[in-house]
Amino acid sequence: MLKRKLIILILGFMLPIIFTSAPIYVYASDNIRLIVDGNEVNIELVKSWIMEQGAEEDSSYYFDGLSFEVVNLDEDDDLEIIATIDGGVHLGQFFIFDKADGKYKLIAEKPQKIEKVNLPPSINLDGKKFFALIERTGGTGLDIYYEHIAYLEDRKLKIAWTGVQKERDANLGLYNLRIGNYQYNPENQLLYTWESRFEHDIETMDILENKGTVTKVYQFVDGKFVEVRGGSANSKTSEIDTKIEPPILKMKLMVNYGMEAELLIDEITEEKLNYRYFDFQHNYKPSNKQEEMAINEMFERVVEDGHLFPKYTFHFYVHTAEQDVEVKVPNGFIDKLKNDHEFRSKVISKINQPFDI
Picture 1 (tube, rainbow, N blue to C red):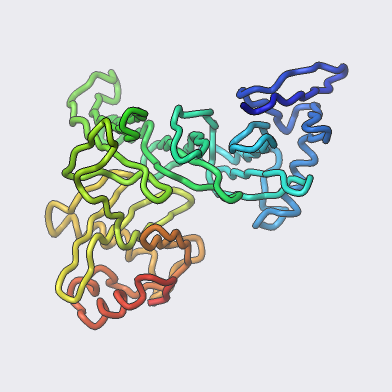
Picture 2 (cartoon, one colour):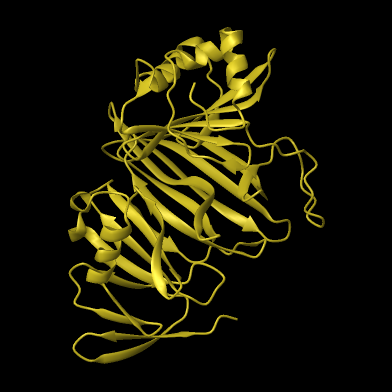
């Protein structure tokens, strides 16, 4: 059992607080000093850490929107410091500082607006301490709230699963709503998720159509929750009848810090190519040629002469070895994979390493 931490807030007088699992928030406008493990931490100190250790130039950070909280995110007794910058409705940045050798060091920086950190999501697997990050972003609609189930490992932030909490979109007199949630079952160590879609009248908010609910089941494999397809789980042994294989390749298109789409290649050989699209966290195969062309265009529109615009990045994940690399891609990437066998062979030969194709 973790020993409790004594934190003293100094706000004109000394106020002792016993820290357990509840985070303590400090905002840029607050005149508050925290004594954490005998060391003073305040908003100016956190600001200086970001300026010294952050990935961007000092002037690019909107420090008026800076806040931080003190919480224990991992298995050790030391407290971590989570800092967030609120840059607007959908804009923000997120930082995690971990204590090492008596000093706080930046171990994670993400260009995302994290509105809330939930502790814990009642998941206990492989000795890992999980927490949930609630992200708000824009996408192509009004806004989307994602929930990321995360953990720290080897002083790195790992994302085990991402799902939609709430997505809103309004057009042509209609208000489209997608809501989702999850439940972890410790009896068989499976994660159960669901997403429901509704179409509302934009004026009255009456439900015009219930578009149904999609349910999925995930098992924790190699540090991530991987979808269980076509199998069953034995609650006593937690063994999955179906062999779980992650996609060989994930191509993510990030646009203005929000995920536009994802291409998952499940199988690629000289004779065979199986792939899926993953649009705003929803798996599907294109229903017709026109839809597939529209998605291809989404990928291709950010490509110019085989190079990506600076603010767009493709992220590649190869098997369970996570690799984030910025790459050049040719125009017509998907069509080339399907129809150009020489090009496909080149991709196959590079599949287990960061590559520039």
